[in-house]
Image (cartoon, rainbow, N blue to C red):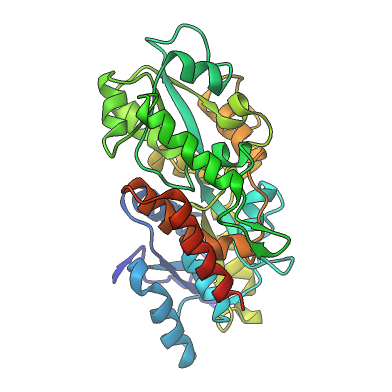
Length: 371
């Protein structure tokens, strides 16, 4: 555990109340962590009535550490982590309904942390798949995916159902239907067969070095996360991008699985601390803070106000299109629970397993788990 942004409170004028010390546990790393800690310091500076005590906790031990401490009446007031960790905390009853007003979040990003129609966390940063292209090689903007594949090749890192979610949804893919697992649906099988056919025709390159191939100019198109724009900028590549819904239609809905949220503790959110907890959450959710996080890390703001001034055709405008058209899937939906099984099947298929056999296998497991 690493503690940062900790300072000794100053009392101010005689008789003034001591600042409220709010503990924040987070699992962010790299550029996201560095920028977040800067924002914590700014909040401390601009709001002397609160002191943020920030502690980094490894993702693989996050939930257990929180749960063990809460059993003894301890733990942090605020959690900042990804969807999977916050969902696990919600299932254990470790979270109270989020205090911050986050009405400006995209509905689909808010749905990620909504359980039984109650938001238990505020979406802060997210990510969507975008189709990047080499502006120095592509003179005409991409119109539709079919035309692109007739003329060119698209590279992607892996056969991952999350990054393929927009394309897969546009082709009629489903995870469940009427509350019943549908992992082996004919549309899912047809889509996977199509991808493998495109791969055999060298129209689709599935390679862990896809980003590097795009940077070197070996391929002109790259299906990748919006956050990878940071790497492209650092490599000084001349690039543009379009949302998948721009080239596949309105049914190309991205699944916002890679979403970071802000939540507050079920046992530490007491009346005396509600005001400082809300203040910190709402400071972090300001458009200027989310935009600073995006510039540092590449992760996209979940706040729709961050995109109001974006110009047509820019990265921000295409990201906004993808977010506005993303999959509105509530956090407790069956599809989220089945996603790991779908991912398991796709990985086996990428390794050479038979499509029908793998989909049938995970479908059987899904039906068994739902009984």
